[in-house]
Length: 424
Image (cartoon, rainbow, N blue to C red):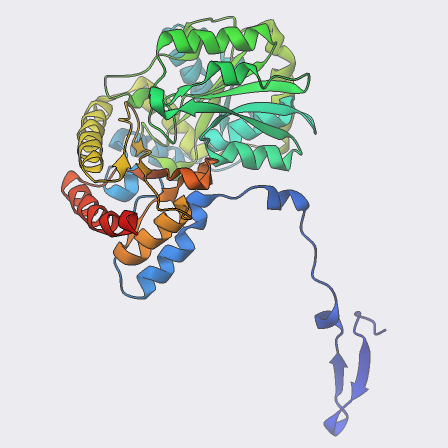
């Protein structure tokens, strides 16, 4: 064996030394088994869209909820806050929990809405996704179970797979406006259950839960001693106005709330979010564990943290216009989809997602329909099985952020395609 690990050294033409490596004959470097336990259909499907695009078909991307990609603009006072931070030299590492003014602004925001939170229980994170990962890592051991809604947002499955923990799915019922099936939820609890995930307003369905359902979820969590992860990213995007935080219903419940600048403040690429840990003493150890994990990753994006104060303490008039735009697009979406034979659709009441259902021909799956639609028309949605639903049920998620006139064109394409597809 040669000095640098070559398998054989020989002297070639003109006496030059050449190496014959054995690297190509060795086995591939293995990957962790946990990687095979989740997929992320929202982005995975883009590879096929790119092939369709390369073949000359225009692709209408309705798969990722990025308002900026559809022409919605980040408020200028948020941009100015980040520019000022950059110019003022705030380009080094910051406190692991976030800069104090941002944490104070988040605490004041929740407190003003009836969920008293102190700044020392707020963490500024690299988007809501990091906050969720920090929380699950701090509170769920290998083999632990977390109750997650179905359809779900795939991030939860991914994080739990990394932790060697288990997601147990409770049904959301499309026949009841995608409300949680509380009886099913109650049947899932075991001694290994550690937490309850609530996504409300919901992604991927666009549903908002009424107060009695919210209270029932909190009562259930309290009865079983569960941590509540309240994913409230779309809380400011209810079509009828901002949706109240879960912490308002019970300020002393074991609730951690998550939100960010991504959706309601139109800055998804900044990867700036926050988590607010309720005042209950039952959560004191969780605060300490999250702090330890946050220290390990140093900090989130410091210049963007300066936009948190601007967002929560400044002008929010853009949200009124944004909600109006979303309501109009939701109306077009629901009306047009319901007019297509073979498609049904529950009307969303928040955010920018709808989850219609296609009456599939025998033997076909939701992925078959979505890929066939993409190849025939260039319209890209996400199949419902990417959110955990049964492939044969025929659900898909549509992001309706495109302008209404473009949505009308898209639904014309879907109608023409579906007529042939459903008839076989």
